Length: 84
Image (cartoon, rainbow, N blue to C red):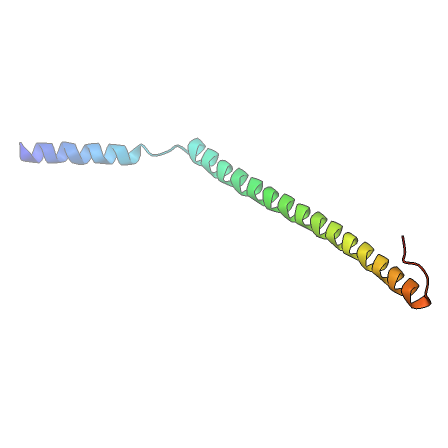
């Protein structure tokens, strides 16, 4: 009886092992992984673009402030009024 139960248990374990995912399920899982990676890459690219735009805007503001300061400094050196 012990041998019969052992063989049935072994057969049951092997049948569970043999019933793994089908090729279609494996392909679907692989496609989901690829889609996840692509969406993560797109999100990273969007963040990088937003950062570049913000950096560009900050640089433009700094350039404008520096130009105004230079005009004001030049006007003061000439003895004129400050720039508007």
